[in-house]
Each structure stands twice: as structure tokens, then as C-alpha cells.
Length: 184
Image 1 (cartoon, rainbow, N blue to C red):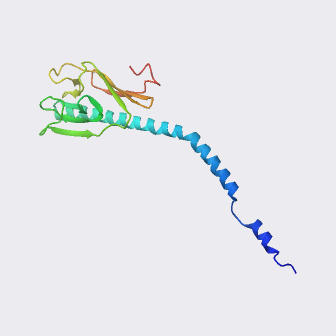
Image 2 (cartoon, one colour):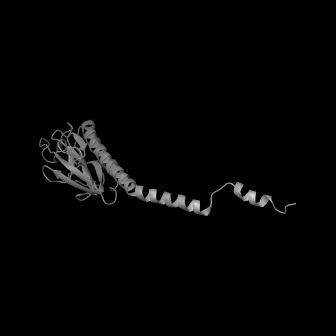
């Protein structure tokens, strides 16, 4: 009679992995994760850039449509003096000081842009605001027949997007890296 014949066969039949097998699988997973992490970060930053540009585009369109709906001037101004990265505000700026004041009708307040983003404005008269008249045309505070055009360049970690407002006040977005001819 054998003393313990089943002990040896029981060890071979147990389900599971050895410590060495588990360590090899973890090492392979870590290498794959490390290889994919920079691309994932780039994807996240590109998404942040697109979302911010789309939200700004929506604010421009809101200012334009509200000006037409109200039959009055509606402005899009930076939340902080000349700093669009601090956010933006759409308002009916009664006194023309390009800031929200008590008693003025504030339509939209947007918070700051993502950390690390730069927003540069290049507009025909170099003032940091966009105002629409009752006809939906971009203009300035004093001369409502003077048309303004320009663009905002959004950059984040090497990615760039541009929002362009033409002389009629119509906005459009483009990627200056992909569509150079169409992004001027």
C-alpha cells in the first residue's frame, strides 16, 4: 500500500498560475502600458483643445444670435482684462467698458481654459472684445457700421486650433496644421 499517492497528482491538477507566470504577464502589461501612455496623454490634450474651441465657438454664436434676437449690441469679452484664458463672458454691455457690471444683462459666463492653454487674439483694431450689432455683424462700440474681423489662436501642448470671424461676423474653426490654405 502506498502512503500518499494522491499528493503528487493533486499539485499538477490545481488550476492557477505560478508566481513566475504572473510576473511575466505583469511585466508585459507594464511595457505595453508605458508604450501607450504618451499617445493617450496626447489624445486627452487634443480633446481638451477641441472642447475649449467648440465652447468658445458656441459663445460667439450665442453672442451673435442674442444680438439679432434682442435687436441690440451683445459683446463677448474676456473674463479678465485682455486674458481670454481666464474665461469669457457674453453680455449686453450698456456702458461699453468691456466688463460685466452690476445691472448689466449677463448671458453667459465661461470658466477658465484648461491649464497650459494659450489663447492669442488677432483682430482688426486690436481691442480685446467681440461685439455684434442687431444685424449680426461684428462691429465696435462706437461705430456700429465699422466691421471687425480677426481670429483667436488656441494652443495646447503643440496642438493648435483657430477660430476665425470674418467681416460679416460669421465664425468658423480650422486646424492650421492640417488645413494651411483654408485656415487664413
